[in-house]
Amino acid sequence: MKYLLLGAGGQLGTAFRSLVRDQGQDCLAFDQELDITDFQRLSQIFADARPEVVINCAAYNNVDRAEAEWRQAFLVNGIAVGGIAQLAREHNCILVHYSTDYVFDGEQKIPYTIADQPFPSPLRGEQVAW
Image (tube, rainbow, N blue to C red):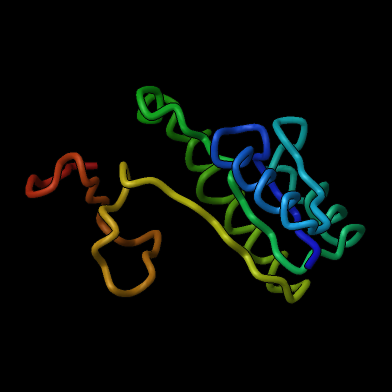
């Protein structure tokens, strides 16, 4: 398998990089040098690399600043991920994307959408006003 790993320098990305390479798989890994909001650059990387699996570990993850910097958080964690999903579909590859329990508690039995009400697990049982 040929892997494309985004966000390879973070904790999750580092673990995936080790796992994929330990299994002897081909892995093209990008850290912060790749701005995942740059759709043209991502499109070129997909075209050049021709991955079979894309693992996205890149994220805006400063939880304490996300409300103040909501535009950047939405751009990175929403719009850019949508672009990655679109490219994965166009290039017929599998997309693996991780999120956090700070947005949804993971209890829903169907895929989450942008229209779903946030329900972070630390606040389980309480209503969250966004």
